[in-house]
Length: 336
Ligand SMILES: [Zn+2]
Ligand SMILES: [Zn+2]
Image (cartoon, rainbow, N blue to C red):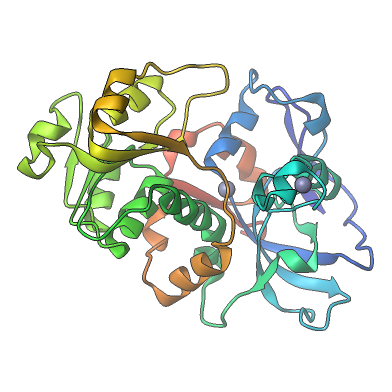
């Protein structure tokens, strides 16, 4: 089969390797689609901080596949499934305090079985969620991304009537706009300088979009004159976190979702945290929202198709990883 292998430091190679052999407790999938996650673009960069342990593994955790071989009755061959990439060992402190998705042994397991940038992938039965018959494979490829966004929104607990400000207008931001509306936000503003992306956000339910280089977001609408109740950061620039705290209303919550790389601090004025009682929280991955995500996509309550602006075959994938700005969300379709 064809697969993309990551040898670290931006060294990605398309290789022909044997189709993996499923053990009794595993499921062999033919990969139908695999989303490229925002963080995976760094795989194509020479200074990506990849550890030697990651070398030689197949990336890709947003897998939609068709069961080829499985020993599980509920997953007969031919079943289309969305794969929940979370693995939990049950032994580490994160697992034993109920935060299974923060399991420290997940990277090790991922390295063992590999990912979805390939014609075939190995997974475990517990990771597989069967797709409704009428759900298109391509749309299902957004399930993991949306699950993570749903988890993030749980952390800042958007309440009916609240004002939400979203910094950045990439794939996650487009989903946050729609989740905020479902949660009953009274006003949703997106801050970004890329017109095509802010226009998409407006079409998906944002009330207003602002380029912060041209206009102060809080001055752009009287509804935000006291700030936003929730600010969601989807930007890798440290100033975005500073802005987020500044743009919060009293009792506001900041979600750090897309963040600067490790080791880069962001200046926050503690006086503002005190004066406004602002909470700053992070979110990563998801706990139990994978099924809800699939249901929201299947029901059409969350629109995902507009976000998928690039579909690539495996032999186009390395080029796609080198051009993150060319697309909002890219999905690999090995058979494309
Ligand atoms: Zn992802
Ligand atoms: Zn664990």
